[in-house]
Length: 586
Image (cartoon, rainbow, N blue to C red; front, side):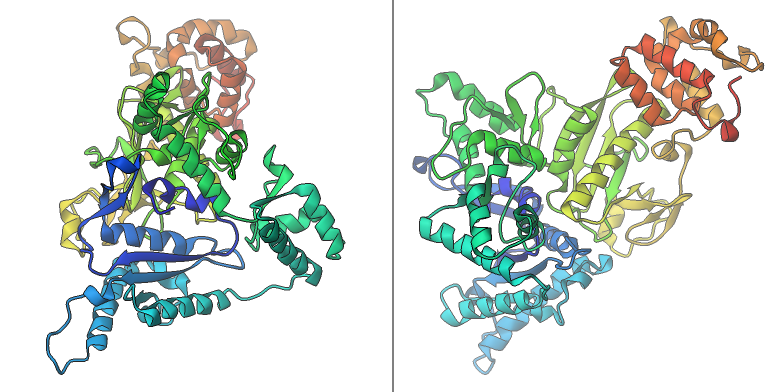
């Protein structure tokens, strides 16, 4: 489970209280690029080194900050322990009078203070509930029995800090017997009907579904997916079953033997595009069946179905790419999190939800990475190229071409909707939004930030630098991302200048009569603005019709621009908008 492919998956599969033990080498250079050694394919190829695009410090801080805020509004917030290995390899004072153990601990504490310092401005560690920095990190010599036992002791102490809840005694007996039954029978999952029988023997009088749901979502001691067909017939007592099953589908794509020449192309598609092909997958003993696993991964937004194919998109298996900041501050907006780093797992989950919930399509002309996905987003009958990138401290949503303000707002709405649902599902706090700091008046405390683009959080009227609290003004183009209509005249001007019809000629709004319009004027009105059919959605926003109403029109008319224009104008003439605030249609 330590391979990069699993890093984005863990938070999506963990339920209830959890203790994260984060392990790294004390001898590693915290400013060096993170490296992982593993065998991705066959034994004969030997061990390979995979290099990340994040430095070691960011990998550790990113994980710590993520789990520090996870499940904080539940009875059992997550806890963590940082373990530094190879303590015996640290360079310590050569002074024979010096106490070696004390020097080793000072070096360890110094590393902990650095880690704390990197995250301290965001207050991420307030929820970890450690009394001292020394409680957070433990240095060990891997071959020293005393050191290993000290880690076990700390784990026991942290578990006791989870507190307790009143649970009916028969429920506890039921949970204990379920695990013992599975252990004796050497099972990793138990048939649901057997759990009902065991519950009766243990004296459980409540509905067994209620009890199973409690141990799944609150206590976290077993897995029971009542809303997933196939999986709702089992209760999983061994969590490793899930991760082993995921490993198998990855291996089946990477280890396609040469004799299966017809399938070799799927290996490249999987490695380069993150696409699983169900025709390659086969059921494996002691693992979940393929259809059961795909249902689970789809339900938890780890994969998404690619329409009209037998393929699934799994962004977590893609390699990471080297990212660069967008140079234009107004063609992109940022997704920000209060604790300073983007929580682990959100990016891939948000990516799959954008595909499923908002029909964003993967841009197959561009290379895809686990930390950067190229999309096509359809708005007003046109597809726009949008790049969704994951940096360690923020996400960037970049629109690669000029578009009407209404299009920017739709993209923002889709992103906001997805993150609202994903954060709620994963028990993370919701994000805020912003832009890259303009920098002219910014006096960041850290000199490194003045040389690179860095985020500024948006308020209603300005943006505040995340590192210096320096305010900057929001211009009209900034505001277009977060408002249906920044200015009625601004939107009308943009619509009239849009490329609709030959030569880009648009409708002259000043020629429209000031008289009150009704349904009888529909035909004349359509003739007046027919050249704007491709941009009917943006015109609807300018006429103050709500996005939900426009989405319904689009769905009912299968995105046909002429039909959508007709029914959008009809909605306006029927006064299906806030006429008290914006006046009658004229």
